[in-house]
Every structure is written in C-alpha cells, then in structure tokens.
Image 1 (cartoon, rainbow, N blue to C red):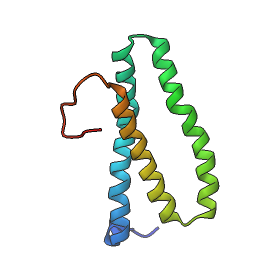
Image 2 (cartoon, helix red, strand yellow):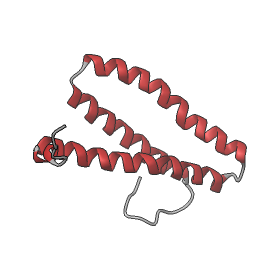
Image 3 (tube, one colour):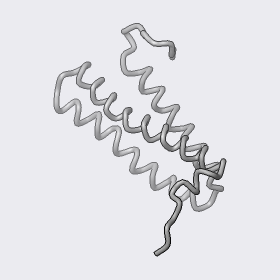
Image 4 (cartoon, rainbow, N blue to C red):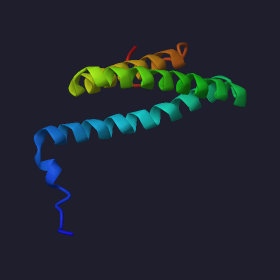
Length: 111
C-alpha cells in the first residue's frame, strides 16, 4: 500500500467550502436536539413531556428522509444540499422562537 496525503481533498476550494459547511451544520444539528430537550424540561419537568418532544423531533425526520431520498435521486446534488440546509436552519430558528414566547430574548437574534 502506498502512502496517501490525507490533506489532498482540502486543496480543492469547493471541497473546503463543503467541508466547513458540513462541520457547522453537524455542530448545529447536534445542539438543536439537546436544546429542545432542555427547553421541554424547563417548560414541563416531566419525562413523558420529554418523550413527546423527542418523538415529535424524530418521527418527522424519518418521514422527510424518505422524501429527501426520492428528491435526491431526481435533482442536482448542490440544490438538494442547499435546500435541505436552508429548510433545516429555518425549522431550527422557528423552534427557537416558539420555545419560550413569554421570556425576553437576551441575544442579538430576534424572531
């Protein structure tokens, strides 16, 4: 086996943009589930409420994965990636806005 340069893909500008975007996307997606769980526990300190929130977070994801798979087979990859990330970001932002409507926002983001 020959030696391979593991940094070779990073020389491609498009791959670098894709890699950075996916890293940010993965970090945000990982945090959104945890934030949703903490928000549910803050609103109603109940294990069953947390279970409902986790199910409401997971079940649509499975359904949209099936639809996304069918669309990914028919549409250009770049369009699917950008569109999927745009929809995911919009849904995360909307869930943040709905999570605590009575409390004032402390950050710079407004709904």
